[in-house]
Length: 442
Image 1 (tube, one colour):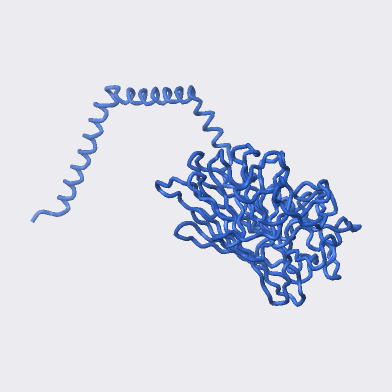
Image 2 (cartoon, rainbow, N blue to C red):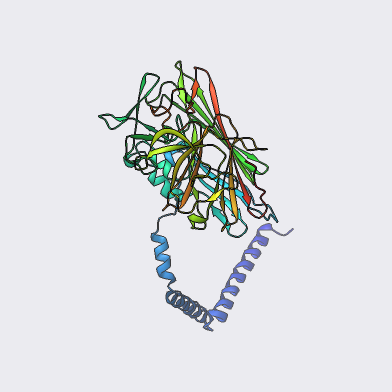
């Protein structure tokens, strides 16, 4: 038999021969022929050409700038220290009329409705409220300086007012506050330099919820929009109110309707008066204030004694035949400078409550506000002559509900809550086309 060691020796010799043969072929084909040199020179020339072209295009400078730049981070704006809530929906396919598209809410600032976006057939997507962008709003709503009492919330969007709506007048206190009285109990209320209507007087405006953060929030996606809820437990509002209060807010968005509900609950052991209101600033999209149409329910106007300070006389006047008559089919604003409250409101026929409308003929749409809770006793209309917005505010109470100007026994709209009792404020906001809308019977 053949020795196995001889086989291994032959195999090793064969592998050595194959390695030497491969090396001789590489030297003959590449090294001696100059092919390797050609390959190296080709790669060098291609690299130089690419570098020169990149330099000509400025890509090196751009690359250096990108390398030096810090990683981009998304900035989240949180007014009042809490995330905003955005309810949104998709526009109907083939829809021919105006529709609500979204609403942005600020639970860190008393559930202020910063913006409502809508689709209008002639304008596309628009913003219906006179408000700054979220970034600017977050900067302004600082809770300090001019916003120390939260009054900056009244200058944008649609703020909720509680535990009273509108204004309360009184005497200045040494600390810059305001002293008012309810049933023999003194109320020390905070004031700003000027109230939300630009008046400089001894007045507290807009309630105490304006800069309150929520304690809980929740959202719910619905087939045609969504729902947002927020709960506030401000207690006695830092000692400015009489009892402990809890406030629950609900906003529901759909294509043609926004429903709002606010519930106030006395969780303390002392009776307290409660007023609730809403302060929306509807933008004049056309920019032409005079052509805006306003319709109001039948009622009386609270006479303003001093337009400079906004103080009231206590008299309730009929509007028929006056420049303040916006009943029936309504009237154009024209050059009328409005800062007035309308009370003793009549319920619209075939409606759930008193109805107000704001129409923009040049933009082809209208907004309808229906007060669906009987506790809403007043509508304040604020339309400054030089303003870019109109405010229609459904609220429980008259302006200055504790004032001595009112006749004895006059119900000024504040709801008395005993310990454990609740009251609610409900409003429906609708958008409609002026081409197809049927006049609401008032």
